Image (tube, rainbow, N blue to C red; front, side, top):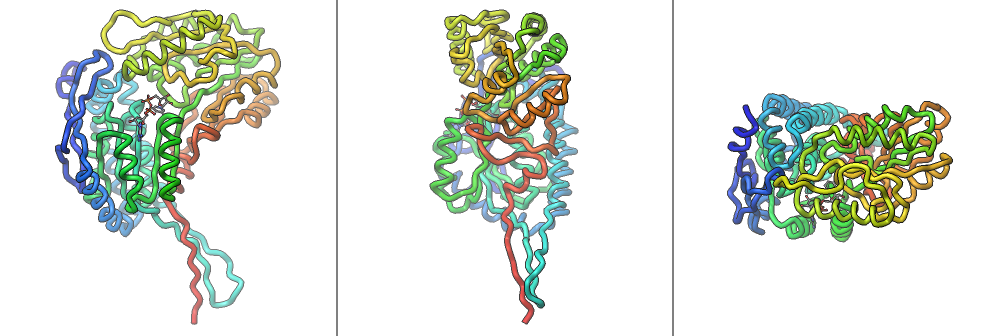
Length: 473
Ligand code: NAD
């Protein structure tokens, strides 16, 4: 199917409550970032729809928590197969609504299927344990139980992966879910919801709403039905969500922003590292929370690295940014850095094409006081600076309040050990950008949030370890 045909078929998205699709009580325009035009609509929920979703999540929880883990796993695996069989069409819709190239969008759907499968296995591995008792005739047990109905709040940069990263472990654990995906990219989340429904998920187990994000999160977090909140987005909104969850004494997982450093040691191959860096940096137009954004390069290879990075960046064609707001934010950061003395080595100005396209941009010799060295660009901008000693590189890397991902390239095992130990981040990758899988835990420290998605840790956020003691009379 051609992209034009997929675009023509871009679906309007309804609410999904209690196993049925609902038109909601209003509608929100969905803007295609490649054109800036309206490509469709998603339904908006009123308070009465949210009440219905809460009631559905409560009754869905009763059914799903009592469903054997094996049967829950069967549904998740069936949904994974369905997603894979629909990957081209769903990928096309994601590409249209989010702006990423279709190949990246299809890969996102396939990766989401893998996340469902990993969590299906995790459902079957929610082992409890027996604690040796001090008394004869007494048995002490730890029994993992689903925490209750979950509120999942997800952003627009990965329209299907972000929802599945929360929904899959929650369902695996036996929780029901109300998901509020980003209004910018509703079709990806709706395709996941449909796949799970088609796979046989009981009504009420998964519910999906859209509307005013602030009003919805405030209303739902304060409801006694919701027992856990999981949010992915900016640090600023994360603070609000975390404060609301704290006020209501709800467990929370917060996956927030990052400003990942890349330390390139003198013994790394500058050209190869630069090519890998450019491919990674500009994926999804840089709108990735683990996107490398500060390249801290040993002075002895700085010129070779920078030249190769610029050459690779100039060869890349990337998709548009999500909206005009992001484009203005990125442009501002670039202008400010140049005013501070950074050299604009590639890109830097938007073209005349319609939509929100901003070219791969490379800033070299960026001074530490430039705002881009402190603020997450969340766009296609790479900032390069030099270092002389490894301690200095670590100091620059660790100087921000973010602590999500950090990368380093070196041929020395000693340096690799020092970097793994010294980098202050939840995720540290040496000599690669790609080692992130459904089976590896993903989460930040400091202002990048708390809690893990994926890995054996992911499902733990949705379980409560009930302690039970049985004394035989
Ligand atoms: P934002 O924080 O305003 O929005 C991010 C998401 O949060 C959106 O989907 C939005 O609908 C939702 N949101 C906003 N206010 C909310 C509220 N009060 N309650 C519940 N949900 C709310 O950010 P933005 O301007 O859309 O995107 C840019 C920034 O967002 C970036 O700087 C980046 O840090 C962050 N972001 C992070 C990720 C990630 O993967 N960690 C993804 C997207 C955006």
